[in-house]
Amino acid sequence: MTIKNSFKQLPDDKGYFGAFGGRYVSETLMPLILEVEKEYEKIKDESSFKEELNHYMETYIGRPSPLFYAKRISEDLGGPKIYFKRDELNHTGAHKINNCMGQILLAKKMGKKRIIAETGAGQHGVATATVCALFGLPCIVYMGEKDIKRQSPNVFRMKLLGAEIRSVKTGSKSLKDAMNEALRDWVTNVRDTFYIIGTAAGPHPYPAMVRDFQSIIGEEVREQILKAENKLPDLLMACIGGGSNALGLFHEFLDDKQIEMIAVEAAGHGIDTGSHAASLSGGKPGILHGNKTYLLQSNDGQIDEAHSISAGLDYPGIGPEHSYLFEQKRVHYMSATDKEAIEAFQYCCNLEGIIPALEPSHALAVLKKIAKNYSKEKIVVMNMCGRGDKDIFTIAEELNIKL
Image (cartoon, rainbow, N blue to C red):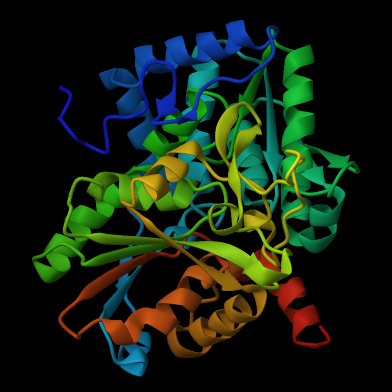
């Protein structure tokens, strides 16, 4: 049933969230994209598919992930009660595997024998390699040369899991270029290959499909916070690169108009420096990787290089649903710099004994700044979407600590 004026009813049948989204792909890929959409629409509501997915979510991934009251941080900031949705406790250490499990089951049902993926921070690559190992499918992961160097723990994990990692040496040598190469691979191997896209971007149906698989995060939060507090949260927060972990938390609550939502982009060295990855704060609409969305680009439409200390946020675009929610003012988009994220990383380690990834550290950095604006009766839920094992070498280098 379609609910009038619902934020949850999109995309439309052509894959648009308002003016954003769509399918901007080559003629070679279009039949395959349409096949993915057809098969996904066919199985997503099937009880057998849901049962299989839920089985692996519970017994393999470890869902539901806990909702943790961050008591010491709440008391230190002197504002609202702060809860962390601890998706970093999932198998593989991030939210990424929620989506990978859904897509690998779809790929199997479509009879695909070869899996490809792109990765930045490596968490999506690890999650893809993991589900491929589980189901005995070959896995090729495209990763920028720069990211391979700064995410060596995840590179090693992917290799242990049997994945072939293809280093991308073009452009910025990071996530954007890894996705370019994965799409080129897909065009030339359409018959047997399934592309597991890691974020809520790309051509339709990927933005909606990834969001759907990640929405289990918010569904669990609704049940958990009602049990813990007997009321819904006042504020939801998450970091945002492409946007899957934020949509995973937000989607369930989009029509609860009293709930505020803040997504935090990577401001890098600062928005005013031009060296950042904040597509909404410093970009404009354009087309990249099969969809229309907000992008960092020059006046003549060339894609600018993004920068973030966090490899997972180092992308010059954002998922099209976020562009729509931004223009509709349903979600408020803020940003945090590299320096602020590192400080929040240390803060979380010291006060809660949780080592966060650099990605959610951006959300915590903003939460630290705004907490004073909320009374003690208010409740905040922040998605702790990844753990920080992968970032220890980057942090050590920034803090001049010898390992």
